Image (cartoon, rainbow, N blue to C red; front, side, top):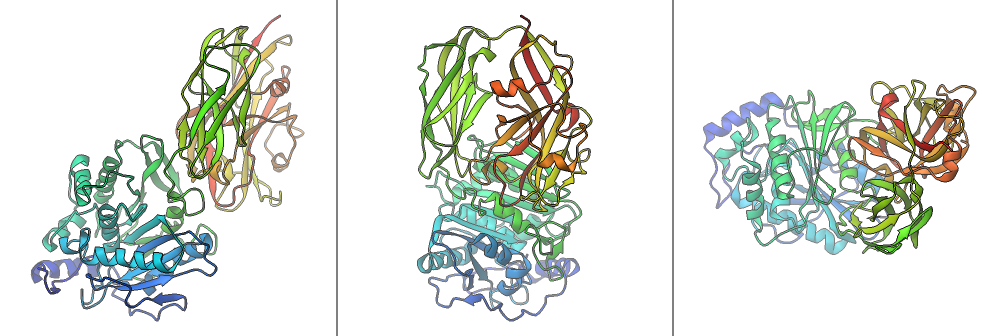
Length: 618
């Protein structure tokens, strides 16, 4: 994390008393520095890579058969580490092989920091745009771009400890180079600009307002107005080298830079650890924080062969916490193919019905949409928040049952999404409804026999989920590679036998999620199947429910939402016929396509889900 009092020509260092204290602290926190092993066969040193004012070394890892226009990740090692230690142990090589992106590993030279190998994140001559080590790292990035087919919009930097602090500086100094940064056990950009300031930055941390922190970033490249890098922030609650206060200060700095507030838009627990996500004004996740309960100083790992596992524990600054930070950053940055650096939203407009039209019954609503990369889906809404339906293929259209709303004026809007989940919203179209619905409304909570069942995509290995009361009902692909489907159960026998059902929809409550199952693969839809009665011999959840065919399939959808409750689309007319007026009605929720990697949403069971039915009595 820190350096000693060695002075590189042209730079002033802190006194030996300060750095002796720092060295004493670090010696108690991490294992003694291990000898640097021989480079892995596929890790290649690149000599004479270009301008090198920081006197660093360059190593690269290029996976076999790397596709053209690939992303690039720049992992920065911590103190007492090297490129050949950090590559495999951190898990980044495994992620690069799996998701096909290039790796660049800058390495500190011992002559710059004898016995410590720390990047000099705390020196203005090394942490600023165009200077020292920061300039050397960007020179390495340019070398990779010149010699490999790299997507310049998908370059990311990450690091632990001193590498984490340096990563923060890099995305502040070069927002035109880096689309995101992963900061593990690090602190705010430009927290220190002289060696004597480093100690306070690390522990207990420096407290500034979000505006003050944001101004520091903006001053690093004054002519830059955006877009700004996405930021993934990780810190252990038991880290006594880099205090957990740095997580808060980092969050405040980068939410301010992105022009958003410090109230999380998403909060949930992943593998036992609290995660918070902050969205910008367009609803895009731009900052996430991971507070790792009980973790000391270091890189969080989860050694093992599973896709979500990574790393080799035991080395200096490598901590087995049953969670792989590299894996989760892959998804946050879109390196799994879910979008990456594309930040341009689609355009969309409703072409029919015309604004001012009078409509009744089943109405076809159509829209045109375009995007610089491609539109994955268009969602149609009535009155702003009530989803009518989704279409994934142009020309985009849905059938809206206008009888489901009251007579009078209503607005129609459309939202278009691309693979990066950028969203564009149409101008509203106002229509007048005649012959609208009325009558009675009944709301039914899901019963105790609801649940979820999971199986591999071919239906094998089916089992009933056991985390209903601890986590909720799973939907999508879990970390065990099984596909989760949920079954809700409603006692609808209170409906009058002669009721004419005019409208019905589900309301569900989000507990947590991981990644975006609606975007994996692009255009995925959460569908509603309705069963008259029970899916099996009784309504209790059972393994056969995973593959059971309901009375009516795909009669509604639930669009992506990020917190609280949401309503589904209105069930189609065929879906309404499946509602049982004399007993139980079961609803199965499933995604239209199998996710190719871990991506799921978890909803609340029982009273957390309701079925609302509107009907008239002849």
